[in-house]
Image (cartoon, rainbow, N blue to C red; front, side, top):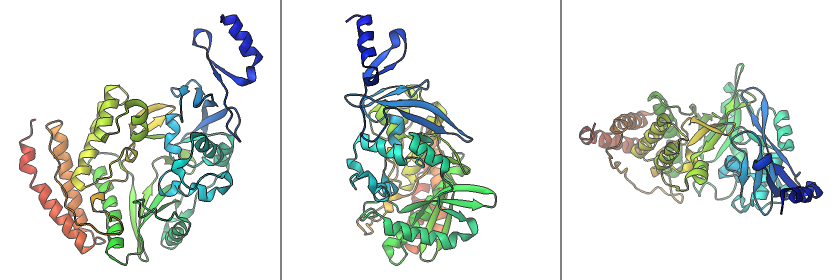
Length: 418
């Protein structure tokens, strides 16, 4: 049909049609209503100071969303827009969403939630999720009215953290620990005038070799983050605390700035799904993003460094959700601080300790200097693990052996091309 005819049809059904753009760039879509939600959903960014409106989401037929705005986020998406994907409930804390919000009437299995159910959850309760995006007016109003979550004075952590851990276990999801999900809770540490949002992982009460190993691994994560920082890369700041029979690892949230500010994040998992489509290793996905001009070489080098360090220390859980980049108004920034870096090779399996030995990495000729640096960092890491007073004797012996075996790789490193 002609353009004037189309314009008359659209004008007669204005409430049913979304019109975006002008002239030759005009696009039309049929509106799709999600039960319980308005036709247009505003998307906000929480900044270090204040907030800003970055886009509007229009659910459209037959599925997906038209994102309207001037940022790079604008466009037509057949499913959940990629920049919202990290906000869907996941992991130990995410599995509590249907428990905390039974009024939604959604399945207890968060993996079965539809895209529309995820959007409705974000619209109603997504005011304090990872990163800095808030979708919808109800969630935005909750953000404005929310105070510090579980505020704990620094000097009271010995009393409050065991209580918060017990509450979390009581409200937890049966089988989550057996599935490999580390129990944790969110809190806000009050340091004099400073307000520091934190994520706190905790071990079971240490009573047997399995619970002892979980505590060992929390100590290892603390040491790994410190080692990474000492070698010039950003890593989440952490602190170890032992109260009662539990070990606590307190990790400062790097997507939060003071009491109300936030910083945007997007995981490699999401970036792979949107821009690469090959869920392989950190290095392979980052290399593809680099070849597309989405990240610079400095960021790529940091990703490679972290992956190689992870192989030296036995971090077998390097999935794409465990590495993130900064996201500002839809534009990718540099690498976010490292997190979840620990020797998961030694984690209990099915509530048992399985004897295993660390494999030395296969040394490739590419970027040999990164092999040198990560090897030195790994030797430091294992040496510190072996000497740490909170590490069990059994795991200290493992760490000592690993440090010696890594040292033996030095002659091979010297033979790599320079």
